Image 1 (cartoon, rainbow, N blue to C red):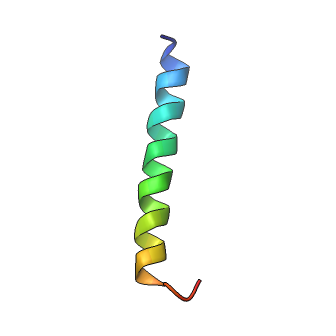
Image 2 (image 1 turned 90 degrees about the horizontal axis):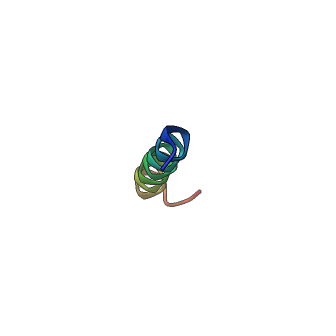
Length: 29
């Protein structure tokens, strides 16, 4: 596997977790 694809995968997972936390804090959004 390429290191860039691994970094991209980790970045996508991190963004998903952060978005989920923000959505739980502000459910009206």
